[in-house]
Structure formats: C-alpha cells, structure tokens
Amino acid sequence: MRNFSYSRAATSQEALTLIATLPNAKFLGGGTNLVDLMRENIEQPDALIDVTRLPSTGIKESGCGGVSIGAEVKIPRWRIIP
Amino acid sequence: MRWSPASRCSNALQEYPNLTGTKKDCNQGACGACTVLCDGERTLACLALAVQYEGAEITTIEGLCKDGELHPLQAAFMEHDGFQCGYCTPGQICSAVGMMREFQAGLPSAVTADVSANALEFSDEEIKERMSGNLCCCGAYVGIRAAIHEAFRSGVPR
Image (cartoon, rainbow over all chains, first blue to last red):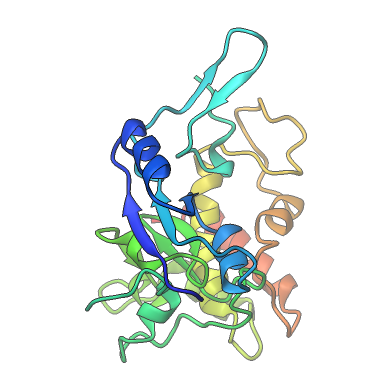
C-alpha cells in the first residue's frame, strides 16, 4: 500500500476544512471498501480523513420523505430510527 | 508500539507473540478469519487501519476466556464439533459473539421478514445470513450453527 497521511476529524467543520486543504484526500469510514481498493492500488489517496469519531448525528427524517444518515452510522445500525 | 497509517489491525496483532489466535487468511475482507471485537463490535482486522482504533478496546479470541474458563461459545463449539481444522474458529467465535449482541439489540438482517418486529426469531436462516461473512473451508457449518444456538439459549453473550 502506498504511503498516506491520516487525520482524525473531531467536528464536521474540521472534516470540511481538511478535505478542502489536503491535496488528494478522501474521507475514511469503516474502511471496508476504501482500504481494500487502496490495498490493490486502485485508490491512491495521499491523505485520509477519519470521520468515524464525529459527534453522533444518527438518523433523522429529512421532512421531505427521506432520511439523513450521519457519516458515523454503520450499516447494521440503520434500523434504529428515532 | 508505533504504526504507520497503512498498518492494519491484523498486522498490529501479529507483533504480540502471545496473541496467535487471530488468523489472517484472504487479507481482503472476504473470509472473516481475522474477525475481532473492537469496542464490542465485530470488525475485520485485515481491513481496519490500526490507527483508527487508537484507544479502542480490542478483544481477540484470547480475551474471551475469563478467569481460566472458556467462553460459553468456545465450550459450545467443542461440544458440537463446530470446526475441523480450526483455522477459521477464532474468527467464527468472535463474529458470533458480536452477532448475538447485534441480535439482542434488535438489529434486523437481510432475511428478517418483519423489520419492525420487536421479538426477532433466532432461526437457522438468521444465523446463516448473519454469519455469512465467516467462511469455513472444512464445511463445519452445521456444528457451528448448533453451537451458536446453544450459546444463545444459555444467555450468551457476556
């Protein structure tokens, strides 16, 4: 795997600032897809921004028939809708 | 110890000579042999960057044993022949512990007929689906399911 830098965003604003300032950066969730693609050099980011520890936003109804799912919500947790 | 950002949990665990239980096999998240529990949730160690889990509690198969006694699921695997060669077993057991916690939390799977149901049925179909990320090349699935059923009936996970 190529070298890359790792940053952990503490807030949504910090995540947005990092993605705007770091060249060739990608957001990192659980990593199941991205890390696997990086392992094969299909994805070659120079920086990863970890968004898994952002303050929990959970799942909220958007008010127009849809739902908004926080970046930290894992797929098995999708059922828990407030 | 210090890790580069590219080090994965499976690499990190290999640096501890007393932790030989966790197995790295396919190294691409397909077989489940490297499954460990990160803060109680099952995680594929081969695709999890070690740096992401800084400060997290990682439980491997060695950590399920308590006060010298096997975890009830470990004992059930022995009772029901839930393995032949044993290579996938640490991952199977860690995954099953996490899976039973998910089930007890009321989380549905792809085969759950009614996702709004409060009382999910812990059926063979549910176990097959929920454990589908853990392959057993010896084909010990019948024994694995029997062991999981028994452990679930006896009130695991702890």
